[in-house]
Length: 505
Image 1 (cartoon, rainbow, N blue to C red):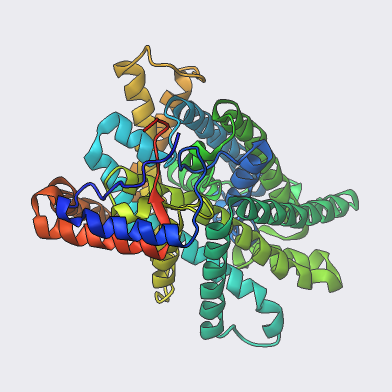
Image 2: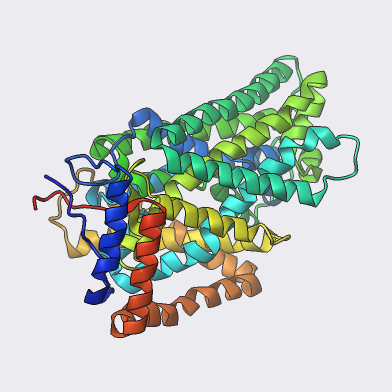
């Protein structure tokens, strides 16, 4: 089999084909060799890679920097630990639902693929729209800024604060570097992920061991009457669980790269079943260690709990914790760039984004245009000085689309009950998680109506964009000609060709 190498942008007019042929001739003159197999993203990710991606993305800066959200709303040490444990179990439930979705619909793109399969083109585009404008660039920007802040923190220990300009410059450099790594080689990206996942687990193990040592030494003051002060109101407890569940965000990330998994029907569920208990146990023990050393009020007052813990428990070695926080966010950012670029790739392949983003570099067999586009959007977000409000938008948008994905699972169970499902979980599990997701969508609207009203406005603004740029795109000759030329230029610039089907010419 040989790949068909004369595929044109679907909206391009016929008279544009010679330009695309010229691009491909140029690729030939550069001695580009494509294998005899179809040009597709390679299945290079095994079980260890899958576990590294899930664990590496979930464990970011949150567990080091801001676990005080749970204790603020739970009100006591005991209830705080309950929230962390139950949040891990609920995230495991969600991950099992996604295991069924990922093996039933073995396409990269995660939520986008499932929403598209169940509800059609417009809801899937709206997910892509929100991911493009809010979810992915904002999440990556926050991680990049956190990395930059903590990697240079030891140099400014005697200063009142850290200058803003070097933080943003370092963040921009690290985004560009990780984008380059992911463009160059999938194996390099997964090795980086594995190394930094190990580093962040090592940092958390240091905290856990130090906490256990202090506990064995008799420091149990904070665990006496552990549930005193608990906020038993429904609003407070629900908000505490919202904070805990948000800290587990990323458990569905492996579904974005299903097409690159070796034997996805086995690798995806096994990676979930291994990684989620690991993360839950680490989170629980880390928070237990925090409360051995720090008073609840100290946790509430700290902007970086891990640093406060290190200053109290590690003595002269407290300088290592900012480095570990930076390494943790570095690994999470790498994993997000790797997984989330596939969303843009799949969206372009389905016609919801410019076809240029669905090109694969013939040298590295990576979606270079999609990776560069994600990197560019992240760099654009670095001009924003205040990302706190955008983080609220991210949490709302992610909850909304997880809700839609679980709805897709239940709808497909009803609409297509005889469909092949390599993994079929008990129907009660997705029903329970459906109501949890419904709560996560509705409750923040009550608590933050203005911010989430703006997020909803951005969401619905995608409807006219879909109508003009997707639904009616083929009816505009000028638009088709422009997009065809744009695709041809990107194809030549990035040595890209469209993904090929496994079929003979």
